[in-house]
Length: 283
Length: 165
Image 1 (cartoon, each protein chain N blue to C red):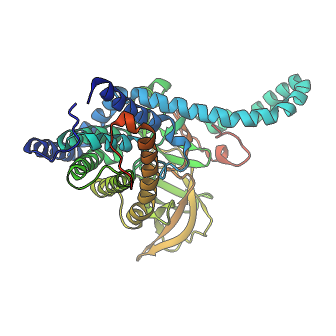
Image 2: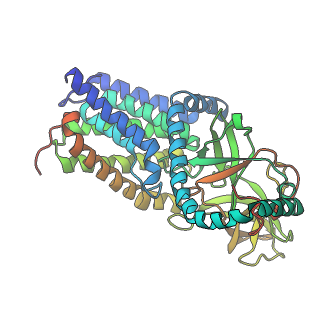
Image 3: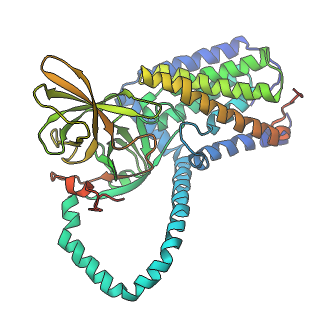
């Protein structure tokens, strides 16, 4: 390493600088087929220990938060332990009765979101679960509130998720009652942290009341039916035969910390799993 | 620099990298929390030649891009430019002063985000406005504050002469 306090740029410095600019431009112009293996290789080699460190740090943070909750619940648990056997049997009966797993119809892998310091972080995020845990590309990624995005690249122990805010994201959406269908895509921001979606292609004669919850329709075969995406908040525009609605997303990609990857989504309707009292989608 | 000084210098940079992946997520909003990785680069550029700073910036940016593939290449470009300009500007214009260094960290963070946002082509309209006028300046302030703190604590290890303001 050459360290010197007082120096100006020499011809060699300028040459190195121009070379880095050229390499950067080449990197930017790489097609996804070449770009993804390079990025994946870096995550699996140089960045692997740092991603492990970030994962451990996130888990530690969660552990401390939960410790407080556990401590607070300890006294209640001690009392409840008196009836533990009875409670366990009742719980088993209720779970069987409710058919929670059948309703979810999916096997899922929990993961932490490893946010990075970049303005484009909400577009693609790294999560702490990868191919070793069964994560595959195109697997839906959900938070308890709804859809975050889909897996674009699955490495060994991490994955890259293209969130709904990514410019290339598209999904078929429908009103919660199934009366209206349209195409969901990201559209800018409505405030400092408020990225929004639009629901396009809704026939002009069909009105969608504000506050309507928009779910994935299941059309297309990638995202299962019934995952909440957001809530209609305004009309964004009207053309000759269609209306476009603004949708406030259910999951803010820049703030979400824990997600589930649906590794076997199945063809069922996931709507019941996201209903407030079902508990089926809690990671 | 003597061998011991070099080791201590690199020790501080490694510490900042570790903080990036361990502490940063605990410092509140991710978009405002200090960027320790960029801070390590900027501290490196204070002492290094512009060419080496550009190369270091390129590598840091490329690693950053691997974690945010939506802007692959844009981070390398932004960090290389910021690294080169920081090192060059330090040599030509700036005195070794704590506040000046703080200003360098602020401007470096903001400029990095501007170049990254523009070069990635993924942000536009109100998104770009909010990013450049709200989030990036706030991140610049926290990064500058962290940088000034690091310089004050480790000024001997970093072998940086800090004049009184």
